[in-house]
Length: 332
Image (cartoon, rainbow, N blue to C red; front, top):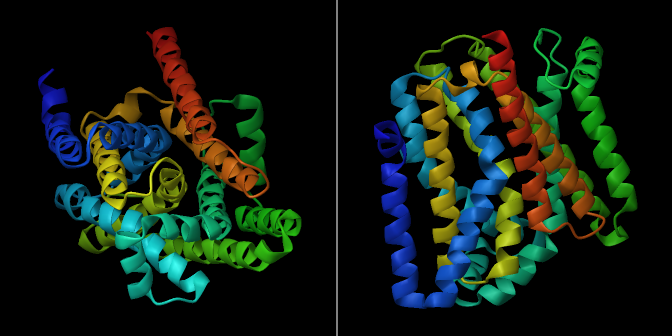
């Protein structure tokens, strides 16, 4: 109980304050919407917490704390507020100041613009997350498998150099062929940009030997990698949030609280060594990531409700959790 309070006490306090302010100033309807956004963010990003925990364990304690402080500022104001403004500005060919003003004072119109650039956002997110999942499953050094008959074959294919890059490029080229003609260029370019960002981040982290405990420079690289990973995870939630409300303060509070909970969960799993005891949890998280990437691809062709996306990810993680418990029981 003490460990729960230690790791999640601040998250609960921030939630009570944030949701209380929403209720006081904006009313019951806004309060309910904010609660739904918190649940949406946590559900969609639970697998993100598992993957983050594995990376965060390689960082020193100072940078782990910065992940929870500096990182949450970047996650809320950078990824969930500023980044969509920049994306809309770049694709719509309008000034970022004008888009920012629109987001604050004409959120309905801003939401419509954000929805219009959703194909490019989903293409970037799908490619990046697909590469994260494939890199894990195609790792030829991977010896422990959860879904044996699939993962064993993927490991053997992993001996082919840069296979994940090839598969990601094939995926984005194929999907862009089937989207409406007006969206083809933006979907293709965003997907290629996702590949480039992944290669750059992998190059930076590899340069600092991230397979072992790293020093300050390596921690900086890992911190940047985690922020990019968080961005890819959150893009779907940001677009989906405008389906519930166009009120930016409600979106910021809902997604911000959810993001803080997810980061607290990440720290909890690192300190409690959860991934060492629940051996298949990381496998389930990467299957969930792959499922999220696929749902992003499908959303370019037809509507995919957020509840389906969240349920797929949660189902993989829960299945891996129970498989880990059964594995531990069989060993004892």
